[in-house]
Length: 263
Image (cartoon, rainbow, N blue to C red; front, side, top):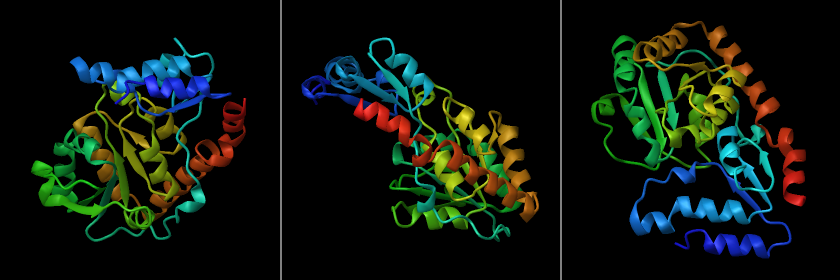
């Protein structure tokens, strides 16, 4: 680890140095030598050295603007056409809830475990966990179906589900996360429930998602979507996909990206 010094040298040597960030690296919790050479140090040196910082959300942009010369806010984007939209909204038997993420973020599922177990008890719903992880999810294990993540398969898996979820714990680090997970769900035309934390707040509004914080809120939101008619889920899915095209597509942000990168 260079602690950001290598990144800073490269950025300073470039005729136009651009640093793109989509995580709150400055909230790195390592201590001692690891902190001095870790993610927080990398953020500090790279942001100060860059001509332009591209931040994935307002929270990151505000922090970067304390030292950066120029900051652009460009949310995490996708190409909607890369995701086959959901075609049938007839409820699966048993219903399928889906979550996509990394092994490191699987812990967020445990934050709503009581809600998910209640949904499972009341509806028989299964939870598909699309991740490279394999660790136990404790009490959730009886309702979990693990699916190895793959670039080719994730769109197909999303399109086959009924409801998608994006839980977060409200922490300084989570407030810096970008809403890429929710954007993926929306591109597949999935109705969704997420935690209104950080960039998720704007994403849930733009993508017709439901934001919940309480245990009962999560339970009733998921149950409500499963119990809704096929036409309701289809309408929410269509709104979500339009939201991606209007707010989170590469085409929407291409001009801003060119301005940031080309100077």
